[in-house]
Length: 507
Ligand code: SF4
Image 1 (cartoon, rainbow, N blue to C red):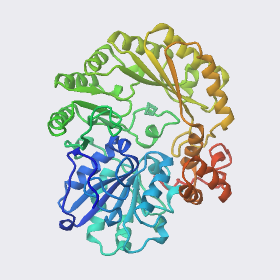
Image 2 (image 1 turned 60 degrees about the vertical axis):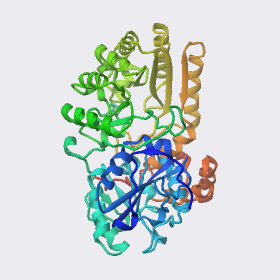
Image 3 (image 1 turned 180 degrees about the vertical axis):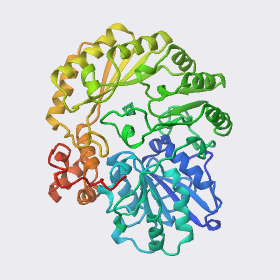
Image 4 (image 1 turned 180 degrees about the horizontal axis):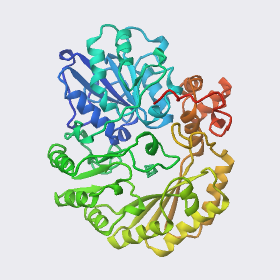
């Protein structure tokens, strides 16, 4: 048997023969990306806290094999349930490759009584599961931690594989395509304080800067909120996860106290959208710093930045302020539903610099519906203005607009690739002589694939299957040609939804 390649804290190994249910938690990308996600920690802990279940993890890259668990080299196909979190649309190819390498038939129709049940959750499939139905026995729509115990019970107490799948179809929030339901509910918890939460989180035993280190570093992940109180027209979180729910300050403190005792790290990473809206964020951050650990927060809304909050974050080791103006144009920003003004953004940057921040990350979307050349000029002027008035290093991330199912802009077309390229060139030229500015752009081909998979229907299963057999971007192109399905232009076709909305049955 191969040796165990990774050393970790808080991983759990049980005797497989002493439990009823074997659950393989799979992340269809790198170990590093998977270990950054909160879903892994929550589900891993909930499943292993059950005496009757053993959950072990599998990753597509950076581990010994995608078909062997990190914990004990348990073969993927030995599990009763193989559960994936799909965070990015394109990772569907990695998911299929993991099944293939693990000797699990990739198509639902080819699976037999001896094969594991393939379950997929996460934001991509909660928004639109239809392109993936050929490969998936059951989808979790919404917040999977609400149904994880029902899933285990359905498999534990039913006899055959088919009976277990039929039982899954009866669970609210589970979508079994072969059951042909007319509607499926998106499930969400009302009171976050009532949920169990992992305080002994799994972290790799690696040096700082290792390729295996999670994106936020080795830290205790503290979920503060779910959902968002705003509703920007392009944003999945703002539509699918309404209303915003928040843990109480008392509960958050309790979790930090237990978390830093049980997870051997020196940092707490706060998780949640639009955290600055939280009444007592400053109290929470300053209190965490007083516990003697570092602290980091994700992007903050510019209108929620205060001197006290930023000073505590600097004491807690954070030196980069991340904000998402989306566009440099006040008017376009209002029209996309983001109620932030240029002056609030400028003020936030000034406050950050005086508090001791030395770098700034700005997120912009290019190709927004209604965007003009003048709006692109406004984005250039905004970045130039910030660079002129501060000494911070600036990284501006330019991301193409991707229409997402279940948002107000689900029917808006993505501009063609040449149009997007032109907009990026325009910004690059405009900022050529601006000091301390670095531009980052998402691969435009990737944005085209994401758009198609976001709003596509079941016919895309054919393209996905062919692309998985070739791999890479070339594979997607080849698959498009072979199947005759216009994948790369689907997101730009205003007529594409003329036949109805594939995800309309999600409630
Ligand atoms: S873009 Fe940010 S503020 Fe707007 S809805 Fe999404 S998470 Fe909320």
